Amino acid sequence: MTTYPRLLQTVLDTTDVRGLAEFYRELLGLTYRSGDEPPAAGEPDDADWLVLRADDGTRQLAFQGTEVVHRSTWPEPDVPMQLHLDLTVATVAELEEVRERALALGATPLLDRTDDPDEPLHVLADPAGHPFCVFVA
Image 1: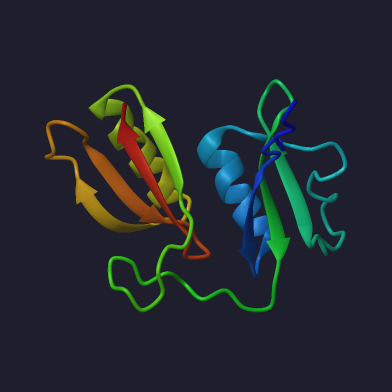
Image 2: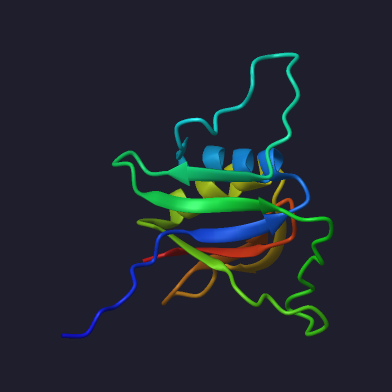
């Protein structure tokens, strides 16, 4: 019998743990793991590790504090993506809705390939500079 590990979550490094967690929480409609919620107003937020979960409780993304994050320069090769998230929607209208929400939350557009009839997509960077794709599937 072969034992295979199970993927628990994807972890993103960031200099602003709460800020990046909030970006993805709002973009993807996720919730914090119990105990990771934002502190009460006026209390310090010194979180250096946060986890976001789906409605069924499965872990989706985690955020780890670090001193420096070098923003990807993709599509230029100087600092490659190294890892990115692929997010899907059902229609081009939903694609545009998600793009607008991501931009309002602080994302930066990197590539607009919505004219591709086979796979319309947007590539954006989150506030920490991690690229992610949103496409119709």
